[in-house]
Image (cartoon, rainbow, N blue to C red; front, side, top):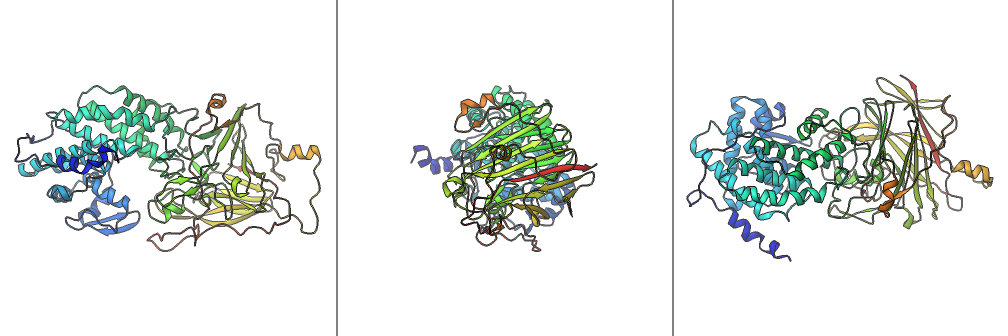
Length: 628
C-alpha cells in the first residue's frame, strides 16, 4: 500500500482540527464575495422549505441533522451533501428559503469533525463552492457566531481536500475538488497554502483527462459537459480575485468548448452516449459561454472517437471507437457503432439515455438500449460487478466526404471470439441531408445466430406503417423507413430527459431463407454488388443511386499512427465494453422506477433457427425525407 494512502486517516484527522479556540486566525467574512453562476429551480426550493426532496423521481423527507443513510443511492447522497440545492432556495428568494438555507448549513457545521462526510473531496469541493457562492443569500445577514463557525468550517474542509488529493478522485470530480480548494483560497487569502496546493495540482488533473481534441477521456458527453462547467467556475473565481489565469486552464477551456459544441444536436441538448442525458439546452449554452467566448465548433474529434456527419438539416453522431481505458470506464456503455440521427431541432433515432437509479443504470449500458446491432446470448464486452469493464473490442472507422455527402464505415470485433463474427456497419448521408442509408452485417461468423438491429425513436416521433415501409412523423417532417429485413414496431423507453418516457423502436431482423432450398450462388458481379455501400430495394423515387465513396483510409484504434489520414470530420476515442443486451424497454406504471435486471428483463428476440443454414444476409435500410 502506498505510504500516502496508509497515512490518509491521520492526515485527514489532523486537517479537520477546528481552528476556533486555537492559534489560527479565522476571518469574520470572505475577502472576496463569490457568486454562484448557475440558475436554480424554485420548485425544488419550495419543496425544501417544506422539508421535502424529490431526486430521480423518488420523494424523500429531510430529517434534521441526518446527512447520510446507507439506504440512500450514492447520487442522492452526493446531491444532498454537496449543497448545490442552495441555489434552488436562492431562486425561490423568500425569507422562508433564506431561513431554511441557514438552518441546514448550521446543522452541518455543528457536526463534530469526525462525523462529517469529507472522505470524497469532490463532494466537499462542491459544498465549499455552494457555501461561498450563496454566501450573500444565507450568511451575510446572519449573526457573528454563525459566520465565524462557517468560516472555520471552510478552512477545515479545504484542508481535508489538501489531505486527500490527488489520490482520492479522478476525472471531472477531481476538478470539482480543486474548485472548492480554489474558492476557499481566494476567500481566505491569509492562508496561501490553499492556492499553492491548487496551482501545484491543476495542471496534472487537466492533462490526465482532457484529450488533445478537447474531448473527455471517458468518451461521455455528460462528463465533458461537467468538465467544462468546472473549468468555467474556476476561471470565474480567478477573475473575481484578480489572479493570473493558469495557461493550462485557459487552454483546456479553449479546447473543450468546441468539442462540447460538436456533441450537441441542433436542439441544443447533448447526444446520448456513455451515460449522457440531453441536459437543459439553455444551461449547456450558458456553461459554454461562461467557459469561452469562442463560438467555434470542432470539425472533428479524432481522439474522442465520435463521427459527426452533417448535411443540410440532417445530423448523424456515431460512436466510432473502443471503450474508455481502465480507470475511466465507469460510464462506458456497450454502444460501439451506435448512432443518433436528427433533422433540424427534431431527434428521430436516439439511444435510450442513462439513469442514476440502480438497476436502470446498469441495464441502460447494454446494446439493447442503443441504436445498434446485437446478438442474442452474446456480449461484445463485459461489465464487472464494480462497474468497470473488461474484454474491450477493437474498433475501426473510416469517414469520407465528397460534395457534401458522407460515408462512414465502422467495425468492431466484440462478437468474434464467441463465434458471432465482426460487426460491420456502413452509413451514407446524402449531400442534401434528405437520405440516410445503412448496411448491417456480420463477417466471418461461425455460429448460426440471427442479428437484431434496433432503432430507438424519440418520444416525439409517431410511427405509421404503410405499404412501402414505416413513416416516421415529427411536427415538421415525415421520413420513410424501409428495409429488406423484417421490421417490427415495439415499445421502448427513453431516459434522455431525466425521466422515464414511453416511446417506440423499430426492430429489424434478416429474412429467413427458405427451409427447403439452398440459396443460389452469387456471381462475382452480384458478390461485388452485395458488398457495395447500401442501397436497399423499393426506395422512394430519386434515392436509388448512392455514389461510390471516395478513396479513404481505414483507421484502427490499434494503430494510432494511421489516424492522421482520417478526414477531420471524424472522431476517435476509447469506447465502452459491451455485455449482453439487458434493458427492459416496455413501459412501467410504477413511478418509483423499478430496477430492471439483465437476467429477467432482456429485450432480445429469440434467435432464429438457422442451424445448418448459411449465415443471414446483410440488412439494408434507408430513411428518406418524404414531406416537409
